[in-house]
Length: 163
Image 1 (cartoon, rainbow, N blue to C red):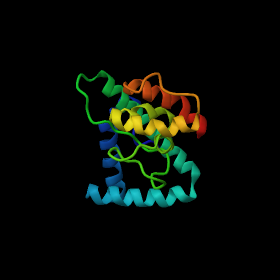
Image 2 (spheres, rainbow, N blue to C red):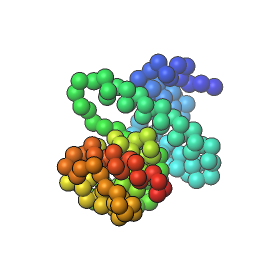
Image 3 (cartoon, rainbow, N blue to C red):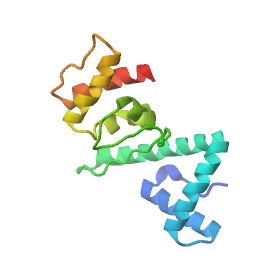
């Protein structure tokens, strides 16, 4: 049974609102914060025992992420970037203000979101993080270390080779 008849024609916000409304009705609980927390806990428990459930979540996340990317490309103002983890967020550390580990970032957000995730870091942090990649690929280096784009392009080329 499909709750949302034409999700591809709905925005991210519309899909979220429709799913929340349907779930509130099905469960019979109106407190969205409590319902969200309960849903997350039940989903985690199910994910440990049901790989197809995890695959469905990942597929839906990628669909929703695509909606977010399309919207941000067409908007004139930069908004908040929403990245959706596809890897296990409990392994290692990913911090926007701390030390950058591009390998961990790639595992957490995957190839499709890797560039977007890297773009959230400052040039200084990217310079530090690129050293891990250079160390694993002797004789290589980014085109320049003075531009974020060059460092990010380099990481996108070499990090996936080591995963």
